[in-house]
Length: 498
View 1 (spheres, rainbow, N blue to C red):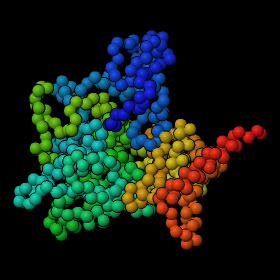
View 2 (view 1 turned 135 degrees about the horizontal axis):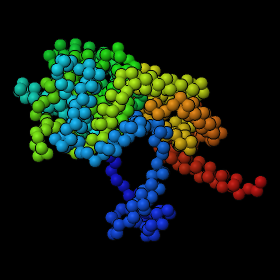
View 3 (view 1 turned 90 degrees about the horizontal axis):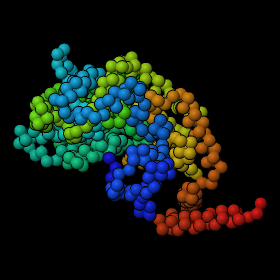
View 4 (view 1 turned 60 degrees about the horizontal axis):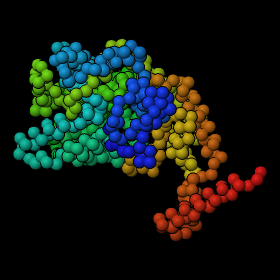
């Protein structure tokens, strides 16, 4: 959710050309209109504005699913008026969620008996799932510390600096210190050895990422587990592991079934996964699965009866739609193991097509790994004159949304472009993107370097000659003077008669 802002105070009304067939008066932007308008006008006004959004299929920044089969679209619309929390009124929807939890738990190799039910819950997304898992770890750690008569007011969690912002939210919202393992150039995931070094008696868990947002790489959960087992044995602690498999949880079981990252490892106590990423469901569904009932403190579960029968609930939200739960069940039974494997293999193959195309240009370093989330992260070999942000901006002219971003500490000097390969990103689109990136690079080669880039190059040359480095104010003044001269020259050239 984004905090709202009023875009402009100069034009406080909404206008629509076609809606004028039904209504001539403009509508206030930020206040409730006094009168009703025809449904056709309301539709047209909103539809006109939404035309300015990008095409979701070309939004290569997002991991979130943007296409589903028409049959599933119909199921979603048929259930759009069902409130999932009304479990007594919609018992079949509740049953479908329970089936999803058990299917995913078995996929993650949860140690369940033949008649044993998995412990887990559907969430709005992985952010809520991580909040719930973190709360379970915090409460279990606090209960143990209380029983031992030890302080329990300074819990911490160990992660890599590459974690998604939801981990920072959890730490801040629920008063847990976040201890981050810094990155370094060429190594953009958490180092298990350094993570275990940071563990102390107040560590509620170590969070490993199966599919880093930055470059799609899987962290070595097996090595983390082995190192932590040794440290727990040495210290007498029982520090557990949570696996944030938001992106990779629906990839690893199908592409890398032999990879040990899940409940096969004894210290992995909970796993979250985003159904709306490679679970292949539209935005609005995540899952968190616990190893056993003992790993989810009973005191966190609420029991309500004012909607009918007794209902246990452990969520941050209450009301939510049923559609995404139903859609997840559709995908699980529709695709099965074979179908998911085919989709993930296709995504991986298309990622390799894009990677090879970028390598052939000779202009980029590939930052992502072949094993991991099917994405391609890449950076310029030479960004002295033009950088990755310029490429991202110019690609928008072709309709592509490709994010450019800097790496976290201590690799913040590295800038990366990232293309996420989803089910609806075909080999043809991958080849087209490479062609358009080539066009952008050709155009950038014909443009003058950015003002800041020119000054950086000049300053570097001065430094080589032993000159004193300029202050920030001097640099800013030089940038301003250079920019004024550049604009003035452009105006002069435009006024010349050819």
